[in-house]
Image (cartoon, rainbow, N blue to C red; front, side, top):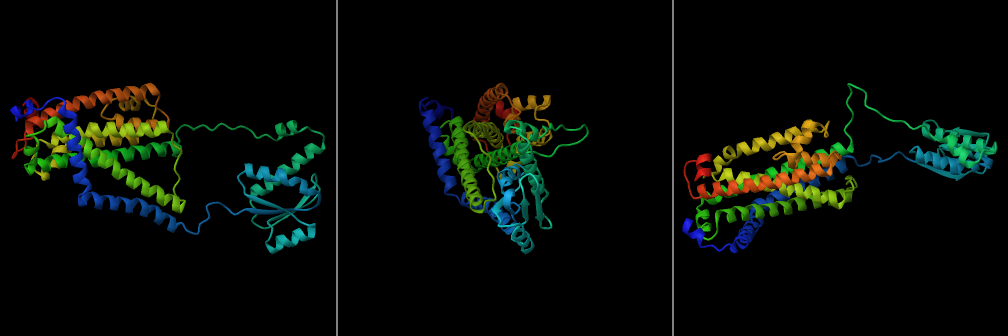
Length: 402
C-alpha cells in the first residue's frame, strides 16, 4: 500500500476526492434506502402538517367581526371607533343605519351586534348579548375623543390625552417566563442540526465498515490514498444528506402553504448562511470522527459500539442545549458555545435567540475549523493504519501510532 501511494501525484488529490464523492452520491441516490427513507420523512413531515390542518378544520383562526351600525350624528364616531377597535385587536365592520328604531330591530334580528344613535358627544347604544368588551371600550374612547374636540382641544392635545400608559414588563424573582419565539427558534435549529449530523455521520461510519467488510476498500486504496477516500466519502454523503433535507423541507413548505397551517419566520441571508455554515462545520467535525472510529472494526454489528464515544460526546452537547435555553448568555453557555465539539449545537441555538455577539461567532468558527483540521489528520492516520486490517477490532492507540 505504501508503494502505491507514493505513485500518486499531489495534483491528483482533489480529483480523487471528487471521484470518490461522485461514486458515493450515485451509489446512495440509486439505493432503495435513500428512496424509502426520503419518502418516509416526507410523509411524516407533510402528513403531519396535513393531519393537523384536518384536525383543526372548521375552527376559526380569528374571532368573527363585530357588526356596528351608526345613525344620525353618531356617524361622526365611526372613523375614530374603527381605528381604536383595530388598535385593540378587534375586527369590526361599520355601516349606516336610517334611524334608532331600525338599529334596535337589526340588533334584535341578529344583523347588527351594536347600534349607536344620538349625537357624537352624547351617543346611546343598543348591544346584543355577548358583545365583546373591546367593542364597548372602543366606543367609549371614540365618544371621549369627540367630547374633547367639541371642548376646543386641538388634535395634538387630544392625542396626548388619549395616549396609553407605557408598561414595562419584568420577570418576578422565583417565577419562570413562557417560551417565546426566539427560544423556540433556537430549539428548532439545534434539534435539526443534531438529527441531521447524527444521521449522516452514522451513514459515514456504516459506509466505511461496509467497504472494509466487502474488501472493496482494498481495491479503492490501490488507486487513491486513504485520506482521499475518507474525504470523498464525507463530501459525497454530506451532499446527499443536504439533498434529502432539502426535499423534506420543500415538502413541508408546500404542505404548509396549501393548508395555511405553517408559519415561517422571516430569515435573512445572513441567518440562513450562518445555519448552513454550522451544519457543514458540525457535519465535517463529527463525520471525520465517526469515520475514524468505524475504521477500527470490520463488521456492521460493531459499528454502534465503536462509535459510542463520539455519540456520547455529541449527545452530551445536545442535552446541554436544553439547560442553556433558559440563560443563553450565561458564562458556562458562552464558553461551551465557543469551544468544539459543542460549538455547532450551542452556538446555533444562541444565534437563533439573538444572544451571540459577532466576535463570539467568529472565534467559535475559527476554533471549529482548526479542530476539524486536527480531527481530519487524525482520522486519516487511523484510516490508513486500520483500513486494510480485518477481523478483530484494531486498538485505537495502535491505529494512531501505526
